[in-house]
Image 1 (cartoon, rainbow, N blue to C red):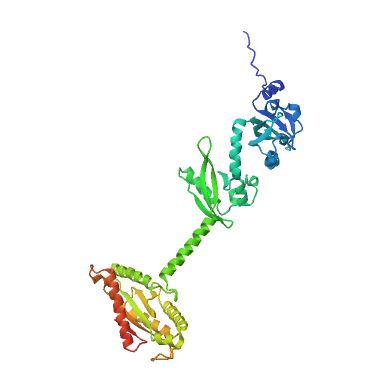
Image 2 (spheres, rainbow, N blue to C red; image 1 turned 90 degrees about the vertical axis):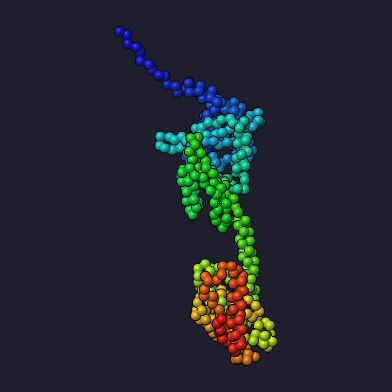
Length: 434
């Protein structure tokens, strides 16, 4: 019986085979020390850069880059060396020995001695000149666009940021990469966590607006997927919309001012007649619907023409403002008062009975007297007074349905005005009910 010899696999990484693999690979393999100087190089460097392996030893990657490229990437490489972490996909322009440009994609891993001390990096460079120029152009566009751009991974860490994002957060963009969003923006990182929850549930994520560092921003987030179609992160664009928001606020304020001018009497600040007519129509409709009483008070300053003739129109304007404040201060929430004519005021009292309306009217009369505005030409006393006519619509449900709201309003105004006329006939400074 013949015993077969056991199969012994040769070590594929013996020095000869390893050197052959490295020197005939498509990628340039190298090692650098902690200063970034090449201490070993495969012969592929001749094909990529036109230099022999011996010619690159002792030099750094920056020695072969086109002008300006070293400055662009110096901080990135410095951060790589200080972090002791692997890196990949660093795209850089280089000059061959014959002066032609070549674009390389650089990746590397850290090397440590038996004591765990960093001794350098081992890595590869790959020629991507055919695609690299377009990649660099896109990278330049990404970096220099005025929009603040960033990518956030599932752990809430920024994995990419451009210059505008660095300016927004007050740090160089290269310093932002690797930081957690909740550290940079503790008030808002939960919004992006919620976006991940929505994406995992198959839902879309919406744009959002937020206020940060005294500015308004419109944020457009988009999902970033890995090769397996899983959500790997969120890419978001931040647009500064502060000027637009301020313009909107100014426009809203202007509209509010215009609305106030449209609804308010410029002298007293009370509602004007136009607004009160609309308000009365609304209250009539509500009273009809709910079957609730509706009361009106028509008030008029006694002998106001004599006051103007005696003290002058500026003093008369001051009286109108004082009476307006007294009337406004004597009403309940839900009541409303307007300057309905020259010295005439209309008060609408929703859901108010005749007894309640008389009580409100008497309170208003007393508040005006309590102002103690001197009126020496008032035949009924030495202070300014008002007269009031009150009417109450007790049975709105019984009104014929064919009667229009406008007709009802006219009747209510007419009734309260008639009551005011009787108050004046009976001596003024009093309340009379229709």
